[in-house]
Structures are given as C-alpha cells and as structure tokens.
Image (cartoon, rainbow, N blue to C red; front, side, top):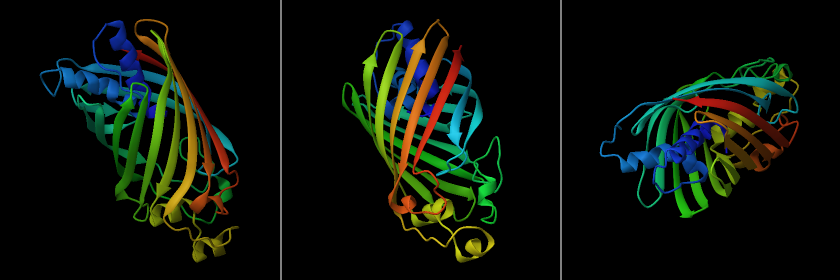
Length: 282
C-alpha cells in the first residue's frame, strides 16, 4: 500500500462512521475504491457533494532507486473528490470508476520528478551520480485496474507512461496482490506483494549507464533490457481516532533483481521505505 492510497482509506473509514451500506473493496482498489463505491451508488456520475482531505506526513526513502543512503521527505497533501473526478496533490488529476462486480479502474495525469546528480531534499538524486546527467521531470499518465477476487483479496495491474518531459523515460508496469488481513470498526491492516517491470527505455534511464555516461562518471557501462527489475512487499495500517482524523503508516520493502539487480547504480539491492501521515477530512 502506498501513500497514494492514503486519502481513499480515510474516505472508507469516514463512510463507515456514517454507516454507508456499500461493498468493501480492498488493496489497490482502496486507493480510490472507497470513493468509487459511492460513485456506483449515486444517481449522478459527478456526485452530490464535494469531499476535501488535507494531510501532513513524512517518509524515509532511498535517495534514488537502488541507493544505500536515505532522506526524509515531507509529504504535504491536498485532495478534492467529487463523483468520479478527483484532484489530488499525490495522485494527480483524473477519474475513477467501480462496477458492481468489484472491477475498479482509474486514470490520472501526474508528474515524475526524475533524478538529479546531487543530494536533494525534494527530488530523487545523489552526488554519487555525478557525471550521469539529470533525468528531467516528466508529465505522466497512470492507469490502474483492480478486481476483487474474494472479500479480502484483490489483484491489480498498473502502468505509468510519459506524455511530456524526459524523452527517453519509457514506461513502467506493476502486477500486484493485496489482502486486508484486519478490518475493524476504526482501522485496517493490509499486506501486499508486487512485481515491477518496465520497457527498455525506462530501465536504461534509471538503471543503465551509456558509454558517454561511463566516461564522465565512476560507473562502468551497463545496458539493461526490458523486463522485471524488482519485487516488493508492502504493509500498511490506518486508524481513525476521531470523526475527521485518520493516522496512516506504511512500510514498503523492494528487492531489485533482473534488469536492475546487476546495475552499477544499485548500491543496495533491498530498499526500505517508511511513511507516516495524519489526515483531516471535511
């Protein structure tokens, strides 16, 4: 479970407190499924009310994919939802839909900050990468589809591709399973497992080293192909302690292998990310 699903969990908790009678969608569907559940029940696709969520948190994350060093990243967040539409500082600008059979789909325009050649408090990057050049930021489109398999298990697929910015960025893909192992009146615990893959351009951009880059940096030339580059396990906990307040905590453990495992840029093959966030809804 990632921070991108935080506000949806809060919406789910809030609706329970208001005793809304809808089916529960878990895992990646919770990223917006809790909101989409109301969409399916409403006569209008554009909803009958606007929901606003604000949050403040922090994450401990690797400086870049494969870095052994970490940084503390502040996470201010604001999200506005109405019907099938949303504007979210974490997820982007987009729409979502959930069918009565438990099939969920969403699409959003977002932004990838790329990677720098220096230590940064707000962008991925490290001074260790000097000579590789900057990976420019890119506007991206993220598409997520999920299907409930049982009352506590969902399978999901996700893709993200560039629409503007870094020309060679490429596209990434994810296949995952997520299960709600505890679902109480005021909180949930969710576990997940994912396979991460990408096309050749993405793997080259984030894990590869060209001949020109090799001559300008400390790294040997490395040319990955398309395919799987990592596996990950996730665990998250969300808890309502007051009517409008929700606390969220998550841990993500990613193991680089395949096309990324042998990259000279990958110092630490197992990376851990932790996030804590407090949300207020109105």
